[in-house]
Length: 358
Image 1 (cartoon, one colour):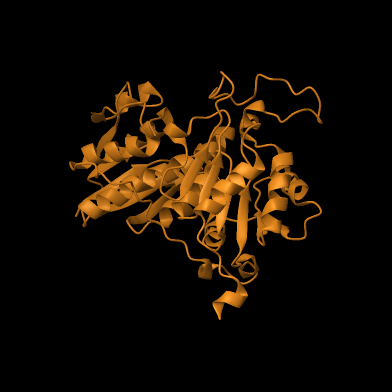
Image 2 (cartoon, rainbow, N blue to C red; image 1 turned 45 degrees about the horizontal axis):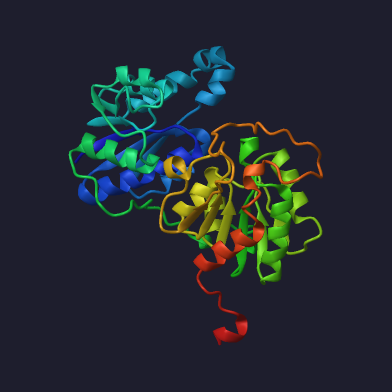
């Protein structure tokens, strides 16, 4: 039986993009098993895949803030011991960064990763014993599927990749089950890039349309800034519910109960698609063809009215002239709430009203 260690530490969307490769390998090599090295905040994602036996948490983000404490406190030694606890036939770096490549050198197994031209950080390729060439112009999911296929000696399946995770709303504990409802739409409004933020005014208009359509709106958040935005979006709308702070596995349970998701280009949007929820992703500065949502249950909508799209920049070069000025960033202007809602309703399964269910 082949035992493989996957190194893919962050971020949420990148981790989710690696799941279809694990599904491919499990289908074509039934005896294969995986362990996964991942940032501690994201453990719940690979742990939900049936082919993943063990998740090995790493805290690179936290250790960078205090390297001395990580080394002297024993955390790094414990991490190295965890890597060497099980024998591996292969270690695959699915990230292609220096931080992930260095982890492969701590494992007593053949290492495989992307070559100099294919890796996000080319120097990482110097750490691998086998190097795989993959086109930079293909979607991240397909690039990782190709990496696994060459590492494990099989052909990449022709069909669309499957994430292999199936969350269940029934797994939510008492207190969270009240957020499981038959007619709900989740708004993923949070994103780390200012340039990716669909305007609050559009979120507010969409909330009104969704509620008028007979749905509740769920508003998750990850930090205080996102919480304030959620409260602003839901202001004056009793059917717009700001969720409590949630762990990823709890979010997955709630996603299993909603009818659809509207999202920016961010990790939770990828998670929704992986959970099989009809999802519309709104893209401003980014290119969905390379790293956007992937799968049958998603639609990515973009505009092309500005020559700078996609700029791939964290901040917009256009300066907002006033808080009451036109939509900002301007690349989102044509992506109106009405067009987003029309796209999502076309994807969603028909909701059964109470008078029809009997």
